[in-house]
Image (cartoon, rainbow, N blue to C red; front, top):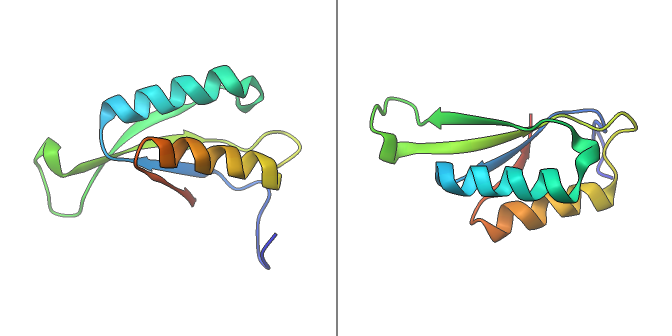
Length: 89
């Protein structure tokens, strides 16, 4: 893990639209029930009111024992498959 990595930090999957966020959350929940309930949030870009200019986030709280490289790779794989990426919050 990189220096300064926090194994108990919240992770965000940043996705292009609501459908992608809902599908990604459903897939993660089915494949990784240990992640608990996943929250889907609309993230409007600064200064934009149009829904077309929004990203959608899947908020993933850390598992009790923290993030492992395998768990983070799983998040990355899901995010990428829905044309998104993962960020640490």
